[in-house]
Every structure is written in structure tokens, then in C-alpha cells.
Image (tube, rainbow, N blue to C red; front, side, top):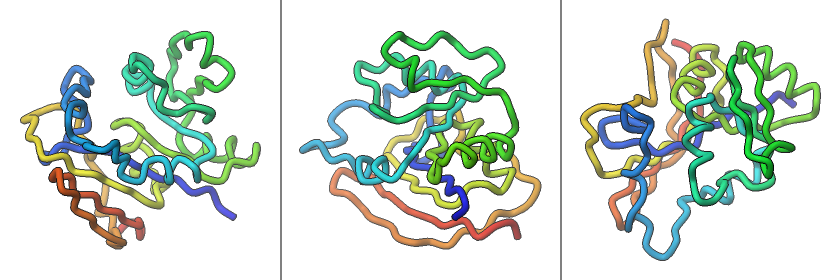
Length: 181
């Protein structure tokens, strides 16, 4: 079985995953009445390891609750920050290209990676290593920030698997990546 790399991410309607300063305040508030998680727990139950960049890690480490409880987290960075004591056993800093990281994680038995963070998603996408993307569009325009997608050398074709609209205006679509065109 080959390693599966998935993205599960929220964006603004104009395609940003965070403000220019990395802020995610636009994701909080009364968006999720009744505690809807939009399939997140079900998705996380399939994931062995999360892979994210240092900026994403630093932003997430400021949350009141660690959202990846019990999951191994790989932080791609040449300057890995100190992990809080309670996260040190589950957090590892690595500096290598995406394919090299996949080879390392496959050798230790991982089968499904959650790829998170703008630069990290873009790097794995450019390397042709993303298999599936779940993108939830939040009904807000930020006007600028950190984009989900960056420049690509060529088109990437995707197969639409489903789209679901929620009462609060969130629209979630799932795609299987078909490869470069």
C-alpha cells in the first residue's frame, strides 16, 4: 500500500487559509452551532501523522487545546522551535524534501498523512504527493493573507467527489487528485 497524503483545510471565499500575520481569528465565533466538526474527527481517525510547517505549528501551539491529541506531528523546519513539554514525545522537527519525508515515514509504517499549512501543502502539491483534498469554504472575504494554493509548474487535475452545503453557509468539497495535466 502506498502512503496517502490528504489535506483537510478551511479557506475564506477568496482562498486564504490565514491572515497575512498567520492569524486564524476569522475561523472562531458562532460559525459552528451545535458543535458541528464538519467531518474532522472522522478524518482524524484515519490519520497516522500530521505534517506541517513551522509557522503553522507555532500558530496551532497557541490554541487553548491541542487539536491533534494523540497524533504524531512532524514540523518541517530548519529551525524547529521548542515543543511544550506535553507535546515533545509527539512532535518531531525534520528538514527534508517531501518525497524524502514520505520515504522516512513509510519506513516506520505510516500509511496516511495529514498535510497542513500553506507552504507545506503547496510543496507537497508541487511534488505531486497530495492524493485527496477536503476544502471547507467559510463565507468571509479576507482581502489578503496566506493563500491555500501557490504557483504550479503545470495544471493539476482533480476529480470532484462531493460537495456539501451547511446551514451556516460553509461549503465543503472533497477532491481526489488525478495528477498533472
